[in-house]
Image (cartoon, rainbow, N blue to C red):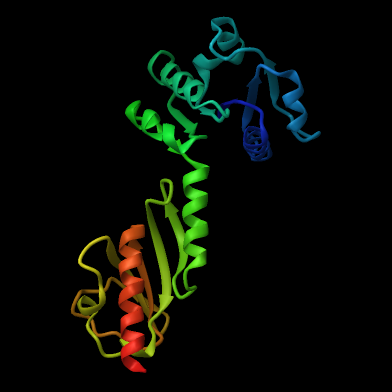
Length: 221
């Protein structure tokens, strides 16, 4: 795969290095030559100094044959414009942008771009870790808007139907493992202590579930 990384700050350098280590052809562009010092010494890809919106620079990058482009500078405007040009003008198959300031995230979404917001995702993950550790995140989709959680069914839930315990919205049971065997659980399934339940949920849904779990725990005491 031939990938262009726009921006050689800490994120760009880390991404370029990871792609390079996986054997992909990588070219990194940045207007500041000193930024390339962020790359590890064993980086085997190319570096191009210049303004990425310059047509000559785009030709030097070989954008017309790129399989993917990642715009990861700390300028949300630049990331959005570069990504839009790559997708619409040069028909780059895969384009991903970094959202630096969460206030500008809607701009990327307006362009219909694949967006990674480290600020939004990181804040949500820290928020979740500050809650009780009963529910463990095992997969995060998008920027954490929907996540898969895993937890062991407590004694307070034993004998209850799954439908009694799930919030009205924002939370969906996707798998249940009992005695080493996984099934797709039905709403009427009776839970047993020690069952391992996997849930797909939004932050609002998992918050509602935590409240429900707390209520059941208080009822047991």
